[in-house]
Length: 190
Image (cartoon, rainbow, N blue to C red; front, top):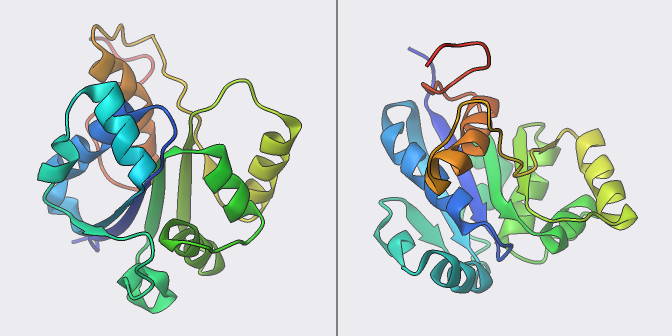
């Protein structure tokens, strides 16, 4: 049997809480492939979630939450062997700090660890339009081994709800992370 995944999930205050919600739901359903999920959720992310989704369902998630200042969290060190970090949604401020190596909180420190250990960093960016600063920061992260996965939904699966639309992005994220996910692929009949 394949080794189970150890995943760090950062949730920032960028708009797009629905992406984080759909990702959490899918990770719960893929628990047979996952050893552990550690979550860092900023206060801004909690505020945006409540504003956009009109609930606090993140409080019911069965994964462990860590405070943004908890540098004793296992994934603050490469020795804990977390193989994937997903930041969803990822604000441009967080992306900028990661791209310049500023580890001023647990999200940015964890991303720094993942990059230095040559493991999987996936940033689900949610911003439009992009400035040249954003693009250059994305370039630096890509050159360092990270993956920029913009929250740009696809429509060829004919999604009917906001959750299905968000899932077109999250299914890509799940596949990029190496988890096996049953999702729509281009060219398949529905």
